[in-house]
Amino acid sequence: MNIVEAFSNGRRTIDGSDYEPDREILITNAIEIGRRLKEAKGLLPHGEWGKSLKESVSERPTG
Image 1 (cartoon, rainbow, N blue to C red):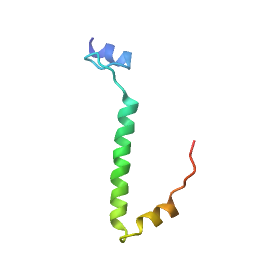
Image 2 (spheres, helix red, strand yellow; image 1 turned 180 degrees about the horizontal axis):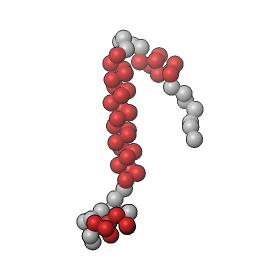
Image 3 (cartoon, helix red, strand yellow; image 1 turned 90 degrees about the vertical axis):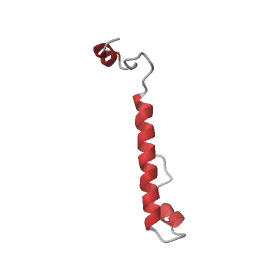
Image 4 (cartoon, rainbow, N blue to C red; image 1 turned 30 degrees about the horizontal axis):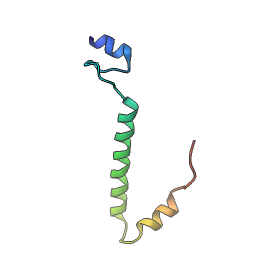
């Protein structure tokens, strides 16, 4: 398979293995969200993280 076939196929890599771009994007975004949450937690005084989450995060599903 050449590179043109790989791009036109959209579901395989050049070596013929499965390619899951949605999964890769999901994992990358989840890791970045975790990093940002950890950074935000570090900015708060000890014991304030739970309170801050309750005040700023909606429990309602979106969509």
